[in-house]
Each structure stands twice: as structure tokens, then as C-alpha cells.
Length: 255
Image 1 (tube, rainbow, N blue to C red):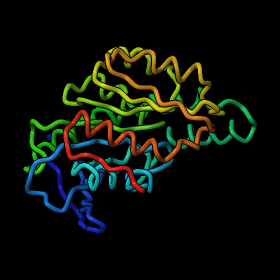
Image 2 (image 1 turned 90 degrees about the horizontal axis):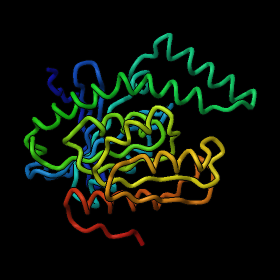
Image 3 (image 1 turned 30 degrees about the vertical axis):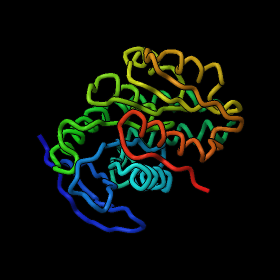
């Protein structure tokens, strides 16, 4: 079992940011300034081609930390961020760029590549959760959520499907291939984001993935717009969702 090692720490605007490693997997933990009291944890998965400290990750973490008093943690997916790319990574990325330049559908390549990354990342997320729960400010029995869109969904669905410690999850914007069968094993509350005019993921595909979740409580959030036009207010909705299901102080919408 790998222990968690903190490697750097900084703080700003009411949030502490601590870099860590679990084995050879790098991650970051965002926490409230008063770390003595236990608080819920939300694990997050970043999108394809980004990394653990991408502005979208830091922004969501800040909402969770300052809005709810939660901890939020992200690890770099294989081949992303501070992790080296393998020859397999390079081949898949080159094929994606080729298809994009030729105007061919990207979905089959993304689904295949993300499924490969998920096979590697799911055990890493479980090991990271083990290590984070050894911290006194998180503990072994507190509620845990998962939040991941795009590639974060490709990794998150198989992770949540086999991880009983996750009690609520936010997913969205992915194809059902390789995920629908695993989604049938998820029964925790789910919030799911879908872009109605997504140029990559047909709306029927997004709806099929949402339909596959076995959760008795699941909410579908549909907005007009293309793949990269998910409204920022959906992040506020996700934070309110986690506050309801993980506990925490009320979230006030920004003026």
C-alpha cells in the first residue's frame, strides 16, 4: 500500500493547496484553512488533454472548499499533467488529431483511448482514496463524492461502479459505449450534464448513458450549446448537489 507524501503547500483566497504523491501518481489536495476538523471529500477527474491543476479543476475545488468547507482532490490521469506519455498515448493522440484534421468522427478514438486510461486510473483513484482517508482532517468514515466531466466521466463511471465509499457523483458529456454497462451498477445519487447541440456526442448517445444509471435519484441537466459551452452555473449546481448529499453548510449563489 502506498502512503501519501506532501511535496508542496501554498494558500490563497481561503483555500490551502497541497501537492502530493501516492506512489508515482501526482495529485493535489485543496482544503479549507482550518484543517483540524473533519470534512467531506470530493474526488475530481480532469478532462482529456488537461491536468490536475487546470483552471477548471482549481475553480471547482474553490467552490467546494469556500462554499461548503469540503476537501477536493485531483490526480493526474495516466499520460497527462506531470506523468509521461507512453508510445500508446502518442499513437492515440496522433490518431485523434488526424481524424480531427480530416473531419472524421472523434468519438470512436476518444472512447477507445479513454477506456484504456480508465483501466489504469481506476486502481489509482482507489489507492489515492485509501491514502487520503488516512489524513486526520478527512478520516476513514466521512462521506466521499466524485465529480468528473468528459474524460473524468470515462474514468469516474467505472470507478464509482466498484467503489462503495462514493455516496454521490456528478458526470456528463461522454458516449455510452464502454460505460453504459458499468453505469447500470451505480445506484448513488447522480447529476448528469449534457449539451444539446454537442458536435461530438449525439444527444441520443448522451441520453442513453444517463438512462443507464440505476440510481433512484438522478438529475439530467441539459443546456443548449456545443461541447465546450457547458455553462459555468452548472458548477454551482454540482456544488449544491454535493452539499445536499455529503453534508455541509449552505451554498450561496454568487451575485
